[in-house]
Structure formats: structure tokens, C-alpha cells
Length: 267
Ligand SMILES: [Fe+2]
Ligand SMILES: [Fe+2]
Image (tube, rainbow, N blue to C red; front, side):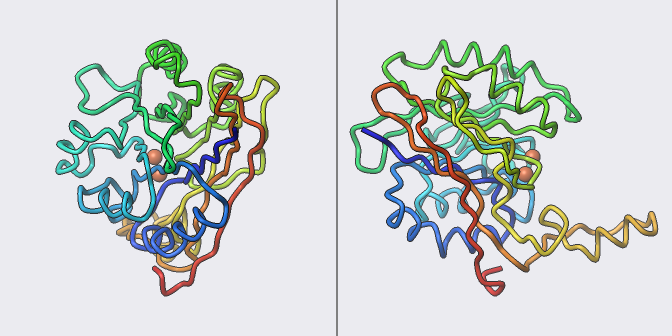
């Protein structure tokens, strides 16, 4: 039996939430999607996630939310991170960090379980523990009968992401990169059965600079003068990958990029 797992990239601001609200349900039906994993670290005004938005994402059809370097930006999310099994924080933070390092979710139709984790990269980012050491530990902690395993690798450097793909090839079903907000064209199934992409791209407004207003970013970049990097609105797109995974072995059979353009007024 094959399970279709949709992994969605960083939801950015109202434009990202809007395109997800408008398009996710239809996509789930159309493509027979069994589980949706979604990085939502930028959902609230471009940085962080609120409890209300978390609930909305679940309502739209998201099954598990992953986070990134902005995980604690909205402090009101901390109780949700502590209590809900539908959200994970980056696994390689310090041990005192609140939230689950991994979780297990049931597929929409029930009957199949999928483990989900997320990790932060080390290159060009704030110092964290090694994601390679952390992922080895986590894969050992996950129940052995949960063979389908999804990893959101939230990292800046494509080299580190590709290295992670090879590191877990055959031990994870999907490794999907997030954080750069730019989709990459390297989706493939690695030889031992891990579906891999360096970055799925953001689910947000592409008429800007990584989700921020282009006039503001240009003001800063062309004059050195500070500007408020408010979130952009135009050209919202839902970006992710759809991975088809064997429920028996946990090996991926296929991976396909998904990019759905919304209406600008969705932002
Ligand atoms: Fe992000
Ligand atoms: Fe990030």
C-alpha cells in the first residue's frame, strides 16, 4: 500500500495562510493525500505562529506542523508546543527547549502511522547542536514499527541539506528542506528510498523578497537606511512536495514538486 504525504514549505503571513485556506482541501481530495506536514514558522506576520493560526492550519487540512528558527517568536505558542502532538519544535535545540522533538501522526483515513521531526542546520545559522547527531538519536527513539518517517530540514546551506539527505538515505522516507523560501529543482528519490528536495519553497507571496515587501527591502539594500520589512501580498503560491511512500517498508517510490498559484487578493 502507498501513502501520499504532502510536505508544505514555510507559510508566510496572510498571503500564505490565504492560499492554503483556499487550495489545500481541494489538493488533498484531488491527489488522494493521506498526510499533510507543514512548516509554519513564518505564519504570523512573517515570524512565528499563534495558537489561533495553529488551529486554523489544522482546520485547513494540515496534520503536523513543523517549525524553524522562529519557533518561539510568539510566546503564546509555548503551551501549544508543550501540549499538542500535532506540532514539533526543531529537535537540535538545547535540552531545556519546550516542545516535542518528534511526533507520530495517523494518516487521514487512519490505519497508518507516520513519524515527523524537524531539525535546524548549523551553517550560516545560529549555533545549534549537530543535526546529524540529533537525527541519529531521533531515528533510534522512534518506534520501530513506525516505518514511515518524515524530516523537515530547516537549513540555509544546500550542501548541508544534501549531506543530510545522504546521511539518512534508507532510514527516512522523506527529507524536505525549508527555510530559504526558494524552491529548488532537485526533487528525487535517493538510491535507498529517501525522497529528497533541498527546499520546497515558501507558501507565501512571491511578489517580494523571500516574502517581504520588495520596496522596503530595496530601500534598505540600495541606501543602507533601515526599513520595516513588512510581509508582501502579491503572487501567493502554495509550494511543497508530494511523496509517495510504501506503508510496508517506509521507502519512497516517487516525489513530485507542487506549486499552486493563488489569486493575489488571497493575500
Ligand atoms: Fe521560513
Ligand atoms: Fe527559518
